[in-house]
Image (cartoon, rainbow, N blue to C red; front, side, top):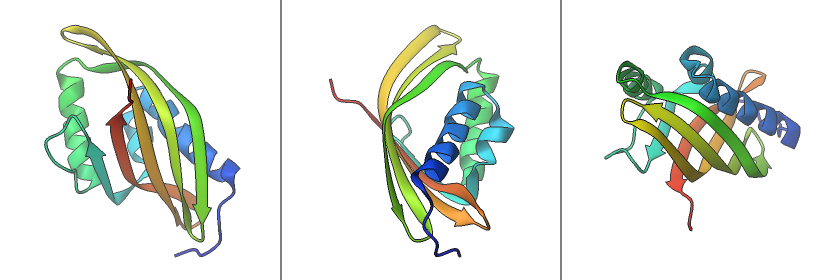
Length: 132
């Protein structure tokens, strides 16, 4: 494991790659930014997703049901670095299309990164509804 500290630009770039892939509905590119052992806490799901494969199965089900991201924007970004990784928090505004129409959400998200070789990969994502 790397013990050097990433720059804020490294972290923002890694987070933007995740948001961009999500907004493009590009599951392959999106999931490639997460470690296989990454965990996910989504308030709309009944339990924690304990690895990337579990989330990938859930994603494929959403897609099969007609779910698609229309827009996803990140704002109010904060980067906290530490030797070997970082914590990235931001506000996320997302609009998705579903079989029932469109749905827009405002959420807060935390993504924890660690180095895998020379690149940052996400090892944990936590999503919660934004207040107000």
